[in-house]
Image 1 (cartoon, rainbow, N blue to C red):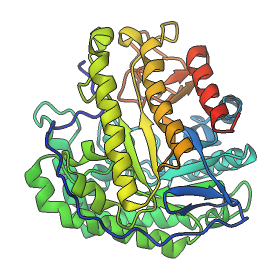
Image 2: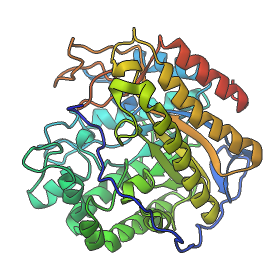
Image 3: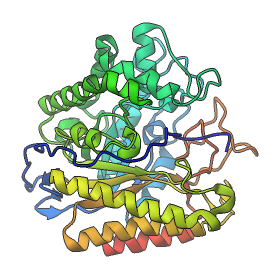
Image 4: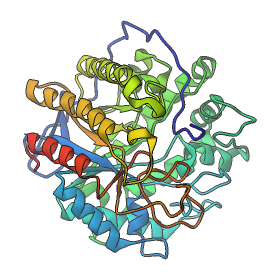
Length: 442
């Protein structure tokens, strides 16, 4: 592969015996529609809240009443997802325009830092439609990666310096190392905090309901996959600043909104160079743990030999789930597998190709979730990556070009159709519906 989504610095020997830290104070379930936490359980209206979810980062873009928006398509996609039993969506509530060449445009903020009001209104429309269908959403407040601008763009606004992901002059892991100074930059953090406050304290322009009062919000999420750095040395240099940002951000959100959960958006040990200790400490003041699983990006499987490499992916996936379920039990907190993705057969992009091995991979995740539902474990659900729906690649090479408006679950820097599920993927949809039925959602 010449295009990679989240390459990582392979490490072995995760730290054992992580110090057990006290969890956040338990939030009791009440009859108000808010999703809350009781120990290892997510609760809603006094009942366990099982999540059969999807990632749909672009919901606010479709929701915008602007030339790039498509509200009619958004409602069709939400209807399809509801029919499949999906009850939770993870969506972007941020996007920062700037000099990074692979970032989506438009964003929530323009290159000069001013607001794109149409995008904020697009989020309002998306949330109103999500609420109509009884779904909930995780609202992601920034991104460690470049495809929506994210922390690197905020750091650029603060310092004038930036690095492009995938720049040959700065090979991996230069980009995650370049993001680590964000956590120690008071100026960059102030810019992040400014956007956070605007979103969390916002009143929905469609419904007139304040976001803090909206049960359709399941949780506020710090960022998509915030790592403490790339190399061990850079992580060590910024680790305390990283924890400080996590804890202060959680405190700010709770001060503004005592009704909703706070999540970090972390990948798990793969986002911490194998360290269980970092994962545990990072979630000390966070309501639930998250794990992301990417066998192809993590070299557990080869796209041109899925049959031959599948046994390794299967074993590593099971092991990864077991590690994070143990960490969640130790912290007495729920766990969501909020991102997991697998290529189509032969790593094809067209919706006309088969998904045999993707179905097997989803089956591994769903089996673990269902086992946890049955035995009272901490895994409360999952969100597959991602929903493409009726979107189709605009170009034969499956590349996204500036100005394209056919948004899909594969972000603009990726091949369009790489990981997302299309509305015609009946094998995938049947699997999702069966899983939702076991969870009592379909």
